Length: 209
Ligand SMILES: N[C@@H](CCC(=O)N[C@@H](CS)C(=O)NCC(=O)O)C(=O)O
Image (cartoon, helix red, strand yellow):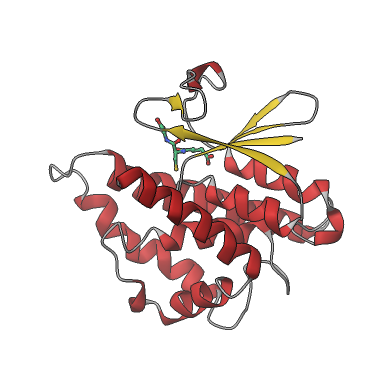
């Protein structure tokens, strides 16, 4: 069975959403990202991945796959009928990769990651100043469209949903972009998305207790 190493509400949430949207069974192993301990057995997460970062997907043959863009596309391709990714060769497949790269670099690493991982000693001013310009890109794209790519939900939507969920805790009011807040609400009407978020929010609360 597939195994996903995750941390509640971290970027690995999009991989959980993808697994659930694809109807794939997996076992889930929670990781404490500060201590790099696996919660199940107190094992060393760096032994699973030297990157020390989630998501890590363990494939049926034991190989370990990292990086959300790769993990998400792998999950999508396990169940092509789910439509979670356009077929390779279709120009929309490269649109999907375009969005996954944009979310992973321009939103996640440029803004969300430093906001949650670094002390704000003033160095976050520049990433903060840039986020409005960055978010205007998906906001304009989604003003007239329901999904990021094509006419149905893909793993790019799973990833953007996760990123948008983190805006409020990062101190950004999504109401500034009506198309993004409408999109986020729409995505959360999907049973798999709602269920994945509810599971991870409960785990997050348990961590904080
Ligand atoms: N490029 C990776 C980034 C993964 C990443 O930064 N994950 C965060 C959680 S959102 C993490 O595990 N951080 C722990 C660390 O970097 O030490 C991806 O897109 O999957």
